[in-house]
Image 1 (cartoon, helix red, strand yellow):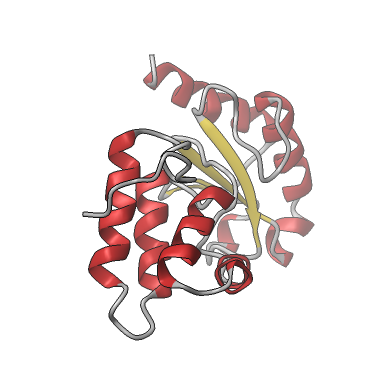
Image 2: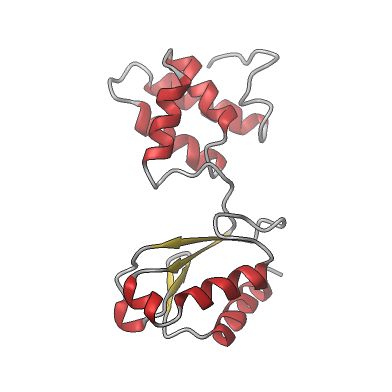
Length: 170
């Protein structure tokens, strides 16, 4: 396994174990043509997102421009540049949900959590994003927490749902 340099960007982020995993992932895959997507997916699994420090290490160790790595990360929606919470909330803003008040649902989530769309709470318990459709139009308005779908929402129901996740985390 690659020995980290004193100024290794990955080693300045997260734990030494995470940095070691990142280096191992790159070393194991770098000789495979088209390995960038796989490495990015694995790196995101290690860190939970793809901060610039991780992208720099990947670019350096693959011998490609940072702009190429960043371009892939920002092109594909599966990659995140910001940390995500333990409970990932996605509020559907597709047409059916929007006309039934999804904007109010998103506003309630943001107010209840004290964060804006795309952010993570300080305690790491929640992050919130919006999406265009979850395929549950008959239940509009809809939000997901992880893989759990919540439909026919009202702002009052949102408060109860968030509180149930808060209680479960205690």
